[in-house]
Amino acid sequence: MWLRACTIVFCVFGVEAAAAAHPFLDRYCTACHNQKLRTAGLAFEDLALPGSDEAGDVWERILRKVRSNAMPPPGVPRPPEEVRQDFVRNVEDTLDRQAESHPDPGRTIVHRLNRAEYGNAVRDLLGLHPDTEALLPPDDAGYGFDNIGELLSISPALLERYLAAARQISELALKGPESRRHWMLCQPSRKAEERRCARAILRALARRAYRRPVANSDLKPLLGFFDQGGRKGGFENGIKAAFEALLVSPEFLLRAEHDPAGSPSGSVHRVSGLELASRLSFFLWSSIPDDELLDAAERGALSEPAALDHQVRRMLADSRSDALVANFAGQWLSLRNLPRVERNPRRFPGFDQLLREDFERETELFVADILREDRSVLDLLAANFTFLNERLARHYGIAGVQGDEFRRVELADPRRGGLLGQASILTVTSYPTRTSVVVRGKWILENLLGEPPPPPPPDVPSLPRPEKDQKPVSLRRQMEQHRAQPACAACHAAMDPLGFALENYDPVGKWRDEEAGAPLDTAARLPDGTQFSGPAGLKRVLLDRRDQFIATFTAKLMIYALGRGLDWHDQPLVRAIDREAAEDGFRFSSIVLGIVKSAPFQMRRTP
Image (spheres, one colour):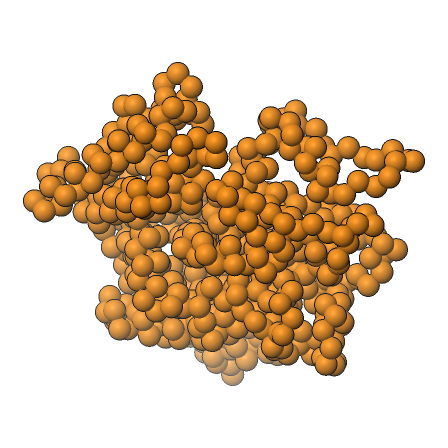
């Protein structure tokens, strides 16, 4: 079917390129990936050509492994570099052209506002800052994020929590002077004016809350609650009752999109301007659209590239984009785990609640600066600056920083700089009493390189504890003994070198030169033969793999933007976004705009 949709040129060259992939597999892959062995559950003898729907997922997996040089594995014949690159280029081109000719934007299902989105929406509607952590339970997470639509359902117990939250928030909205100034458009002086005033207030709020123009049919139930509450306690009690109804309305709590009437099954169509505005605001602000964005959507302006570009840049510059740092970076970088981190005060005497908050604040300010200044995403790894106050600077051994206020500090010390020199990351990837090369290596593979290792076998033993009178054994020596077990060797060969390079940092991110009374050995060797040592060496390795890092960052941000996981249909779009962003130096805005302009963000498929 896909051949018929191609142009003549693509058919000729696409098929030739696709067919050329099989000799590569026969020479370097099928010795392990055949019907008899089925290593990793894969057999390549009868694999369909790249570009065929039935094999798309397998080809993307092959491409990812060969591109990152993870396959073929060490110890077996490996292709010359030019042959490897030709294979990657041919398969990529075939898959990308197939995606371009047959776009599949996927389908984002109806889902409720998560806890953070609910709190931000209440803030923007009523000028309040509710304690949503006390009001609502935490949301389930999938693919690393808690805004995944398929996990955001509403149980009867959760609905009770939303009802209780609506009652409390509505009461605060009536009592708080700041909140009243936010929503109080009019103040009736006599009874005859009350309903007209209530209608004006509710019309303005409902437009924002429902993310669309409101009709009389939308206002009728809200005014019904106003009338009922007003009979019991006057105008303000009526407003309170109407607010409660609005805050639990499905139009507010649920993000729903609608297919055009008569859409054929499986057809692809653009979302409406108002739906696109809602997607934008929840992506960049974790909240509802403001009036300017709604106005642009109603005028149809978001279909114009220049107008859409303007709105995205305006929204990124707005302080509400701090939500992108808190909710995207906070989950991608595991910062949300910091509040649960505990350390023994005798063993780590400087570590306390204030220092833990400083760890988190440094990384938030650092990521926010890259966003606000529209820097290259590569600066997340390579920046020679950070944000410090006196307490955190003292923890790092950096002089010349005084006071509790954070400020930007240029770094002359090569031991710091970039995410991997920050105590937040180093702390959440350690155990309470020691560092973990496995946890740190796994974190890098999963979050920075997009190569999560498989789960460990169920019978893998933990590291042995030394006997009472036994001389302490270095972590490297313990890991070498652990890795000697065949069940452990393959995964640890990829993880451990990355973790060992960070062993100069202790479990709270302080620098150290020895462990267990012996000098630290941070030399490392990856399965492909790459050798490096220490944090500076690891940083160079990651920057040499910048394409892999950028692709991982884009994929993570795209998952967060769409509220769903990615599949093989989405990978060509990730590559297209990255190619375009490369022309702009991988600036943060270029990747955001690439996602916003992509088919999955602007389109949807009918069931």
